[in-house]
Image (tube, rainbow, N blue to C red; front, side):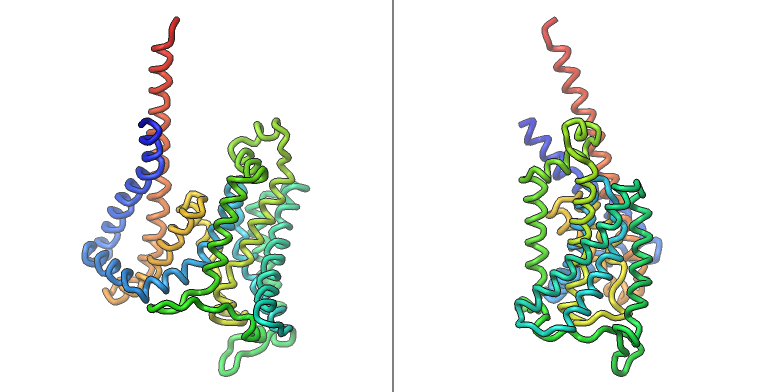
Length: 360
């Protein structure tokens, strides 16, 4: 019974506490901006329950989930991969260029584009890993700088006289379109089409959990994250793990732009979505680095963004959604800290009772 109670405290308590904190703070924010909190939240829930909205939320959550998994991989080793944004944009650009330059049968074309994105993301993140392992350069600093380098490199190569071209009837500069054999098929549902990369995202989540919890490499990563000194004494090589972790994080980050590239735009342009990497960091924190938790966090984040349409109809600024997202992240952090302190007190009481009852 004690184990069941402890498990319930670990799983249910943070959710309940976070929901209460987020609900109260969200209601207060809506009241401050002059909206009826109960009516607004009710309208958002009703809108979100529509089948078409749910399909849109899932499609929007796919890149958030991939970015969250990429961030979570680094978090396990206390490596903050701030460079996910640059990694996925450079990977999507390279995948678009390669995908547009060849024409293969559908499975091969799709596999080629995905492989290019994986390799480019892996290689770009490995640079930060090498700088950290060989020269001790802080990962946060190096990945931020690599974001800037990736942005400049894309801007240089995307120029019309190089790999880009003006989109007809627009000022947008894009790569050539990927042939239809390289488009990701949609999963048909009565409410609309689901992006086919949902399957790949689910497989990545399963593989991430299996590697982390069922392999020697995953055990070493978790051990090093908990205590670097103890892991080093046990013979685990920190530099090797750091390089592998950063490279793996970058490889998954390279896939973040593919739902947009293969499912919607089919080319890379100046209007390609940016900022998904920073959303992934927040989603990983929301999900506590667990694949299921990250999925829930990605869906919640996407739902809030879709709910911005309800706020527009109610005359509320869309920026309120950004505030609510930040409030939810803070609520989750506060909730887990409260539960952690409660568990520490329970453990101390248990040890004290055990010591008092021990024979002299």
